[in-house]
Length: 279
Image (cartoon, rainbow, N blue to C red; front, side, top):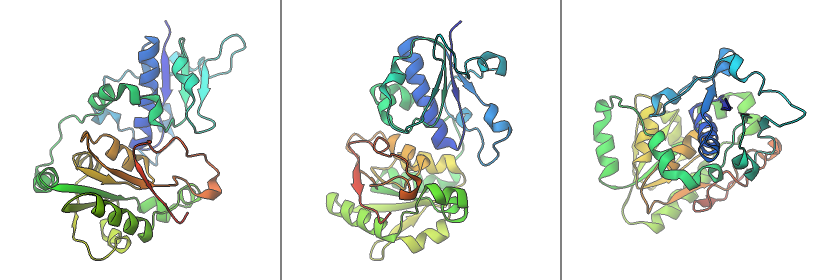
């Protein structure tokens, strides 16, 4: 029996990209989709998180994909995201395949957006402690601002790949959206909510959302009218899952540090507004 198997690795944002791409391949080919979780046996930086969403996951056993995860002479089965840019050939797969990489482009799955939105809706979880924040987000002209600090500041490996969106980026983004919409109400989400205050321009009123977990962060940000994102896959998905048809999303013009030499031309959706960064 043919199968599409996707290797999952990284945090929740990366897992969503990987699954969304593989789901699109599975749907186009009519072949069942399985996830390979074996990387998490050794990768302890992040946890597997897709079980928090309304996805009917099929987990592949090693003996179900080890032969696919090899180069074959007669038929290609191993597909790697080598160039980090959209590869339309992936969507033409019509046989068993093993997908390995990050697949960070909506071009793989934008055509089935409605299905992806349903798959990536959260299972029920308790956010009653912060219900007031959610209500305010839903009932104002809300702009959710995300700052990725934490490992972008303290982790040497991440710092070689990603730059930190600085105060000038947030100043330009906040100033820009303030001219586009009436009476914006700003909500700030960050993995270091205290330090985030140093990166925000003065002259605006902020609501700092110190939520209980990443699920609340992602869900609350997706409920905003508009979003200002950081160069983070978690931040990206928080805005992409926003169903407001009139949403404005502002994103950094670059996604990776220049020295990382990674092509980011397909990461940011075309309808998002790019704000120049100092990277």
